[in-house]
Image (tube, rainbow, N blue to C red):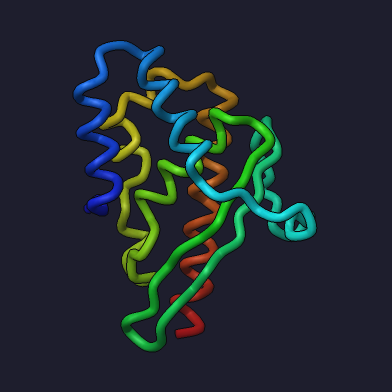
Length: 143
């Protein structure tokens, strides 16, 4: 169950022949993503378990069954900013009740990220997905 934005990334990856081009594309996605203001980057929104510094600021909109999940994110590493952009494409606008049902590892494997990220980056992605799922679960419980 991927969003249209994630499907667009997957289609682009299908056209890119080698991993250097795919890494460049991930970095470009990160560069295109708005960053967080310095004053927002506080320990409370920092994602633990990442080799780089990563911050996630959840955004919940709507009410009742139409509550939707979104987040802003930032990192001090460009490739990680790109990975945040990929996760944003996967989760942005999804009803909070459906976030847990997204098989993030399987969706990211469609891009080949499971085979081409270092173990540290893979652990960081798992930590980011865990944080997203936690935010969404809290929002769903409050809805």
